[in-house]
Image (cartoon, rainbow, N blue to C red; front, side, top):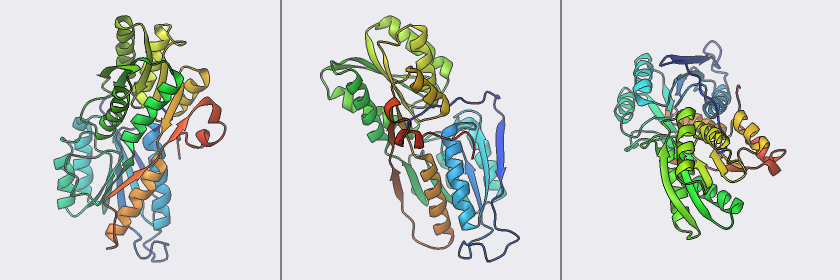
Length: 326
C-alpha cells in the first residue's frame, strides 16, 4: 500500500486491454489439471492505475500457469456509474469467472450478484461490497493495519506530535475507508497529535492539491498528511509544494507507483505504504480456478504491505514498487 500513480484523463471511455494467455487450441495438456480454456475477466477499479496494472500482471501470470485466458477492462475513473456498464457487458459475454475491484460498496453489489446468479464465479479483489456472501473469495490488503502504519510513520517523522490530516478519495470505498479508520484510531489514541479529520478529493489530484492548500491556510502548523491512495498522494505533494511547506509537512502515501517513488527520492514524500497487488491477483486466479474445478476456496484472504522509505529503496522497498506494464 505504498506508492502513487497518475490516471489517464480520457473522459468516460473504457480501456480494454485484452490478454490472451490461454491454453492453445483446447488441448488438455495445459498444466491446468483439465481446467484449460477457462475464461477470466478482470475488471479494474480504474484503468491506467499502476496498482491495477501490477495486479493484472499477477493475474496474467497465474492464468497462464492454469491454462486460462484473461480479458481486462476498467473505467477511466474510480466511479460506479462508469464501472457498472462494464460489469453488465462482461456478464453478458459469460466468462467463467470475474475478478473485480468494486468501486462502491453499495452501488456495485447488485450488478455483481447478477453475475453470480448467471453462473459466473465472482472473486472480489482489493475492494468489496456490503454483502459479499455471493463471492467465491475476498482478497485484499490489511488496510486498517496499513492506516495505522501510516500514522506510525508520521509519528516517527514528528516525534513531538502536532496536527495531522487525511486526504482520501470518496466515502463508501471499502479499502480507503479502512485506511482512514486505521489512521484515525491511531491518531486519536495519541494525545500528542491533533487529528483534523479527513477530506475527500474524489480521486482527483488537482482537488487534493486544493484541499491541502486550503488546509494549510487554515492550519499553517500542520505537521503531517496521510494520503490514502495514489491520486490523493500526488495531489497532496503538489499542495504542500505550492504552499512552500515541504520542510514542515511530512507526507505518507498509500501505494507505490513510479511517480511516487520519484517524489520519495526527491524528498517531497517521506514514506510510502506499498500493497502487494501482484499477490492479490495471483490469489484471485487461484481462488477462481479452485471454484471452477469444484475445489475448496478461502472466503477471505488478507495480504501484507511494505513501508518504503528512501533508506530501503535500493532493497526490499524497491522490490515492492508497482509496475507500469507487465
